[in-house]
Amino acid sequence: MSRLYLVPTPVGNLEDITFRAVRILKEVSFIMAEDTRKSANLLRHYDIKTPMVSHHKFNEHKTVDKFIDRIKAGEQAALITDAGTPAISDPGFLIVRQCIDEGVEVECLPGATAFVPALVVSGLPNERFCFEGFLPQKKGRQKRLSTLAEETRTMIFYESPYRLVKTLHQLGEVLGNDRKASVSREISKLHEETKRGTLSELEQYFSSKTVKGEIVIITEGKQ
Image 1 (tube, one colour):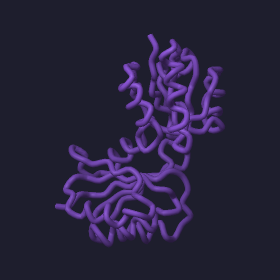
Image 2: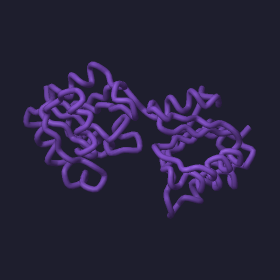
Image 3: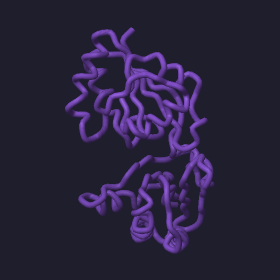
């Protein structure tokens, strides 16, 4: 049956992929990849020779119809991103929605998502949480932050290493510098690190060092 598979890929360690995910990537007709150069490393590691095509946030509106037409014609396709589960702060929503509208089967495999291990090791309440992903870089950033001032659930943010200190400072201004939080980076990689403390303590800590890798910030909700 024609189908689109959303296949999670490792957020760091290449071993963090399921046997089923590797099999699907080998069996589908083609793989839509956010960055074909980065994904080529994963495919080589597992001897996956399936053809790749580029599908990312800058071209997805132009390519989605073409790829759905191929699936409707009888091909099976997989969507992968640079790391983690497609459509979670990555391309995926647009093609999933359009597949559903056009009666194309969509299946998402379980697998890696960066915020889950970061939330679990944060030590903060995790029975209820809200995922905020990346904050707006400019327009709407302060408005988004202000709406979270009264949020009682644990909050999850993605951030780049270049904006980490700025974001911790702004969160402290809105939520209070004594709000408990944690920062996880390089998840599942050799230099994985999780630092816990108040927003003020974390800002001070990361201001004094060079930070690399993908960042997950976990912040305590209002008590």
